[in-house]
Amino acid sequence: MKEKMIFGISASPRKNANVDILLKIALEEAAKEENIRTEILYLRDYKIENCNSCFACCNEVAANRDYPCIAFEDDMNLLYPKLEECDGLLIGSPVYFGSMTAQLKTFMDRTEGLLRYSKSKWKYTLSNKIGAGLVVGGNRNGGQEFTLQAIHYYFLVHNMIVVGTGPDPTPGCYLGASATTYPEKGASRKAVLQDELGVKSAKMVGRRMAEVLSMLNK
Image 1 (cartoon, rainbow, N blue to C red):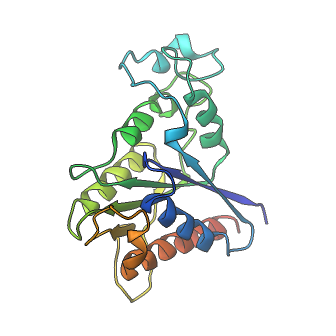
Image 2: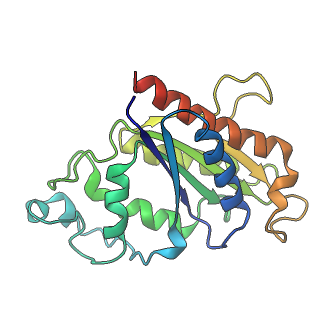
């Protein structure tokens, strides 16, 4: 069977903190499946400019370019090949003011040139790949579900296959991996490890991604 690659994308500005920890837990679970490879990309390590909505990436000017974005020559040029290489994306973000981080939104906006109406060779780059979300909030109901939905919306716009935590009866249905750092609320970089259900949901979503990729590989 062909080897499949899952990239975890950490949108946390904090190194080795709660989102990074939960991503590692999820991807370690995914890697238990045969022929699944994993790697984490940390958006904080990349210099990415804000999209200026010029739409040049979707016009003929992009047709013969090496990379889809015409406006900027930045570290997105390092990430586009990673997106092309992957078979699945597990996007992780802390919850800021009830939604995703600015780093994640900037990354998402800069993938406009990968969509169905692009004129570049990067058209359909993410189409039919697997996508799942992972979020950490300071409170149990602190915006995690909304943030997961926003991540899912991104996958759906790219015509990706969205997966959740799978059929395990306990702890029940999750849109994706969702955890809280309560009562420490992020003061501890390892507070997420106290959330038993959150850690389990991370393992479940990693396993589910691997299962679906393995089924598609048959």
